[in-house]
Length: 105
Image (cartoon, rainbow, N blue to C red; front, side, top):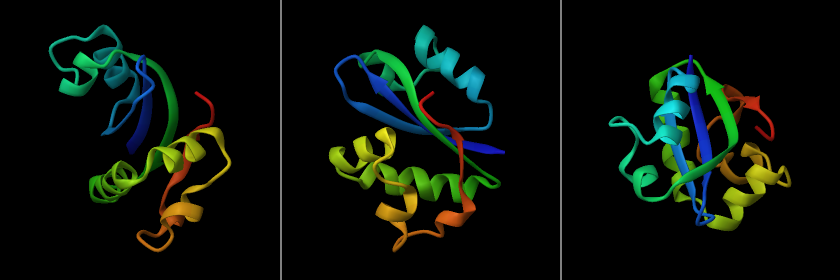
């Protein structure tokens, strides 16, 4: 299983990533160990905001790519629930292939 996640950082920016082990990856980000992302090393993460799961790395990478291309407002709408994936990405990907894993983490 692959997880696509959105992290809120202390500067209110949003980091998006993928992993096969959500708990391990959050530990890497929040503890800022040697395996954390460059971005979260310099932008301290404060909260896991949203997570979706899917079956393949290819699908996970596609969703991550398209989320990263969204405006800040669209990302915020995904996080606060005023928009769903299908509302902002249905013209880009098959949103039925992704399942909400963590609402308001």
